[in-house]
View 1 (cartoon, rainbow, N blue to C red):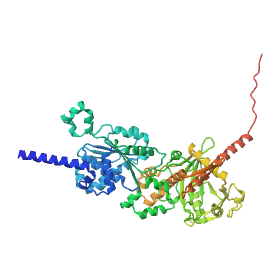
View 2 (spheres, rainbow, N blue to C red):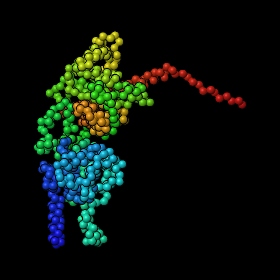
View 3 (tube, rainbow, N blue to C red):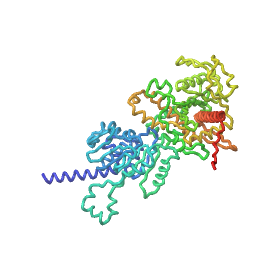
View 4 (cartoon, rainbow, N blue to C red):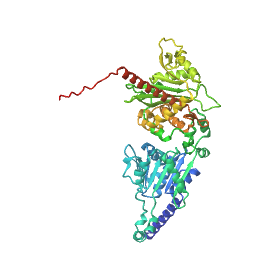
Length: 589
């Protein structure tokens, strides 16, 4: 019986050795046979490349399931390689925790084998990890200085383009100090190698891994240089690097993405080809030599965390009530008008920006872009009512509008009394503050209308001045934009009330941040040409510049207000000017 028992144990261990070796060489088959998960062909290839390469980068189309695939790989590696420690990092902890959630909510309930492997699962505000019976562990960390002292054999950085490069170099990569040592290296045969043939001994050890997951981004960003490094290293047969970018066409072919849904999204008014190319096409976007606005200055300008909202949003979510005006604060509604949508020219839309002007101690204004709206043009009266509604809801002081072309029709409506068909509110007519000829078009009932409309008659010099002023103020930090929509979403999700809102309301709340992202892409994509000292801003192809125009107009008006303040101070100083004489020194001797 003892002999039979020993024979059975040996046979069992031999089977384990053979199966372990087989599945380590074929991790995609392990996913099917052991975890019971069916993979598509491209997912099988990626799992194999994840397993065999020490450095892995996957640029995925939005919705392609990179987090899902990452979760599968973590399970495979932890089970097949006992004692493996995996750290998943991202700029936001909740994002990295999605890997753990997918394991426990999708794979765990449907796989008896996986349930037998997992010992402990914790996912709370302080601890986020999965521990396996074989001592392997998957742990989530936040990509910040607070993550120091963690150790890992595999480092996975999700949405790595959102993580600070310095944090990756000085904190996260330092996790990969000690390599996983297979148990057999503790046997006497291999212990001797440490002192006699260290090179041979190291061949039995396992290299730690770095894995980077993201979508494509701007070429000005450090992640582009990282991608190029991986591309060059992958071409070197002596190095274990892998890089791939899989665009949305593959997702459609594999049935992950619906082709009709893609077509609908591309036909929407706020569709941005640049964002689509980066997030879905795996194409990196770079500034051309003829680009006026640099990506780096625009990213630095995205510092405003809190957007302003009309009553249509705040009525559903009172926590977003707009702040009370500060002393000296001015709010400007700047608009670039398109009267109607054009099938021929799809780059024509109405853009509305709300600028919060905050005075500084040196007679300047900080321009905070706190709200943006963009829609394909409609009837002049309808657009005028939209403008008046926003003007009242956000307590604006001035309206800046180009009255040279199609904006003239909207101006004609603004200088008439209007009734809001939605609220029933009567909006008294406004009049022009800077152009007597335009002021004579006033048709309202009041004898003393508010002079709040700043009429722009754009010329080549005016447009050139607008471009120079906007570029200068962005670089100097005087014009500031809303933060990234993903960061805003993370902040808003901290509220339980927000998490419980209808998805449409959530989308409306995030819309100003999304519109700001579209503005940034629009600015980067604009080109210019010079004519003497003047510059001319132009779109590329079917790209738009309506958001740019509205911002440029509002920024120019803020500069005019600054000049008015300076003139007023100089005039006041001249009026109060007096001579002062120093008393003479008297000599007594």
